[in-house]
Length: 158
Image (cartoon, rainbow, N blue to C red; front, side, top):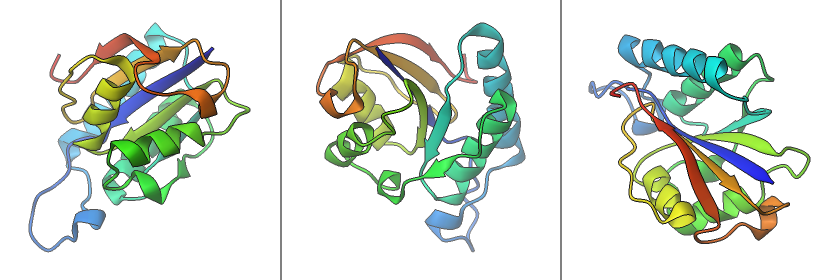
């Protein structure tokens, strides 16, 4: 069985002067990420590894989660940045085979689209939202449309 934690990056600045890729988290975003990671650590099994878009806001979010979970530094996958559904499924299908529970930090609208694709459930993914999806599949390569079951959903907005 495989388990996937989808995390949308925490709240980032929209101030001018930053390229989209380089937008940093706001202080509230940093607080939200630490809060969500701490809550998850206390409530459930934690992922073995985090994979993230290399954009600053996702990388920072992923680092906060990895630190709170006390797991290795996040791996980056540039395909996640601005990924559409078809790219997301390629990312999932190529996740490290030696891990059964992986967190992936990404951006909207792609992260909401892949959650729907995998589970058939429509969920708005606000900043720092976390969705956990389980699969009966024994390998990441075989995961496809509606193979997943949404077993946990939470966000700082409640």
